[in-house]
Image 1 (tube, helix red, strand yellow):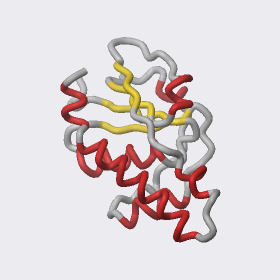
Image 2 (cartoon, one colour):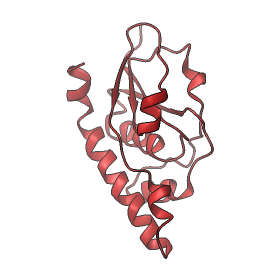
Image 3 (tube, helix red, strand yellow):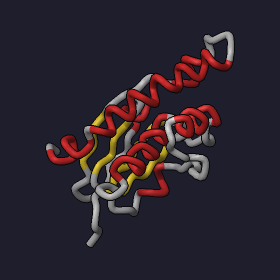
Image 4 (cartoon, helix red, strand yellow):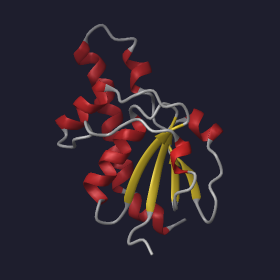
Length: 145
């Protein structure tokens, strides 16, 4: 028997939003939940995501971008899609796995429109803080599914 529920954060690239959510969950609720993250088409960890999480005191530099297929045989209690594309392509997990959606804007897409690095990082910070606020409410979410 596992000692805590496993939550899988899913997005397309597993490079930014899902990694931030995994990092925040481990940082805030590591004693209560086992967080994981994956992507439907993983393409590496975003350096700006690492940087803004480090600013907030959360080290995700050792994380890696993973495919959702790595978790098909793992016991997952809750899948949270954090981008609209992943919501539409989320696979069905066996057993009693619950799935919910909480979409966040894509920082890399937002940052493409910027003129300097600091402005780009501000988009990452905004999404980082929105994800943190969502993660802070995970116990209530998990209790109500």
